[in-house]
Length: 446
Image 1 (cartoon, one colour):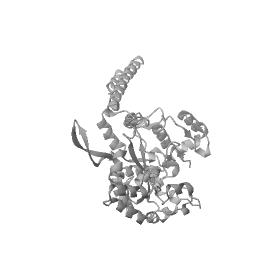
Image 2: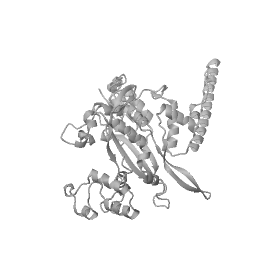
Image 3: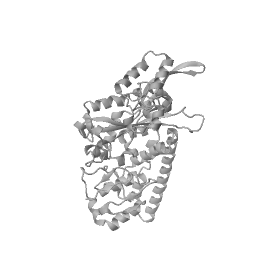
Image 4: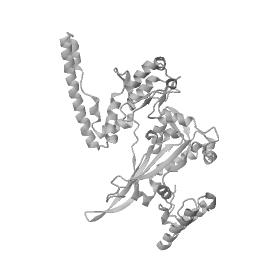
């Protein structure tokens, strides 16, 4: 039985009808649209949806007709049909969903502020109403010229011409629809500390804030995707002597959580800084943001880097996080990860009650972020022993390149040094030992 796979995301289905519905609904207007034929190892590909439909009807008419009748819920990772039918294409269309996607595209795709989106939606809604009224007048005129009974014309005239796009002309209505129908999880305000700022010559105390997305709600939405849940239930460990992913490594296999439960969630945490202004301007670093994301290692590597599988976890100004550390911002994430790794939690996924366990398998970030996250000096050159894994000096790093020739850091010794730095040392003494050991503090450690 042929399985139709989307070339732009992780969707797959054995039903041609659902495959068509998915492509038309999500990718037909994509600027990078391309579709491949997967029937009988056919190598046909095209950037035109119409050309693909013609190819299917001419070259694979029988498989096309057979798969129209297929409905295999266990093997199908597609989505249910929508409520309204586009008679021209024979594909189900949810008009309110299209309207929401239009408004969401303006906000996220075009980076328009909410006030501008409100104005655009109102103007487009008014334009659609005018066109509908014009079409209704033309239809009634054609009916009269062709002798259609007046009662039918009156019925057509009585059809309301208002469209549902106007329902999305306010931010409140859009957020309400996103939450109910699109599984939108609103970020939560997190207080990182406080500071004093000058307002009209007076010092005023203000909260230092960041924003975090509730981890469990975000994880539920991710697991509700049928294709992701399929990957979680079917581990992709290597059956050969070669390693292809994190789950094939020795440390992973020795972890008690994954040794006990091969289907446990493999959480990959990622952090990086972004600059939202001109990087060569005078405001560099003033508006710099630190972003935290997560994804699941249960998802195969070829799908893991796609935007659909990468979930935003938290965001805050970099200068604020350098003072408070990530622990406060990621408190919700840390708490639930401890629960997942020490017994798990019960969750409802796709209508079924399941018990989930999980563990952080890797924190993927560049060297400065990894150094900061572990409480080490961000700049390797600012410390006598700048490596976070060994005790190599800057001179030794340039002359030695094999791990066995270095003395690795010891966890107990590292913790003891962190405690010493946090004790009542004088500022010159603290700066000296911090530079000597390459350690800032242990606040960042989770």
